[in-house]
Amino acid sequence: MFRFNFRKTIEATGVLLRARPPHMMGRVRLLKLLYLADRESLKETGAPITGDHAVAMKHGPILSETYDLIKGEHVRAPEWSRCFENVDYYVRLADQPGTGSLSRYEIEKLNEIAERFEHDDEWAVAEKTHELPEWRKNAPGDSSRPIPFEDILEAVGRGADIPEIRAEAAADEHFARLFGES
Image (cartoon, rainbow, N blue to C red):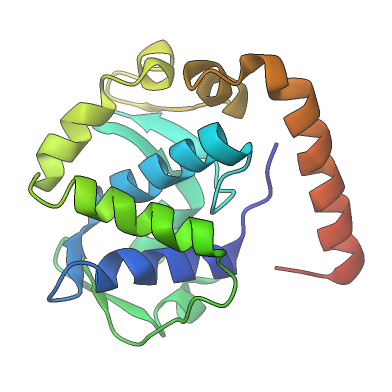
């Protein structure tokens, strides 16, 4: 329903990593915090921050293209690696990506999420995502399974708004294609 926004994903990752000295975070934690920020943005605004596609995996929901970026398996991984580097199972901020594509709300939401979970280790955060209705509905066992945005919207109490949100997402996609935004 939504279009993946590479620039916002890089900037959102940078915000989360800057919020946690030494500007390094476990992959699992990073993926969960980005998912939770997108989820709450959907609830509060009707749109995610990254536009990435959610996938249910054994250890909870993640954002699919972001995971591929971290693993270096995305077509834009070279651009990603200008700002971030993998150190074992951690992602480290290597260069500041800026925040020019993010709204004030999105930056505040990312900082709020980082602060809310600052005392939880990455596996505690992962366990909390197992409580989410959309993950339970799409729980994949040892595999993976897409989580439809409609399931997330239903879980956050925005099910009645799906037609309106879908129409706005389609209009945004059309605008982005017209003007070649990435």
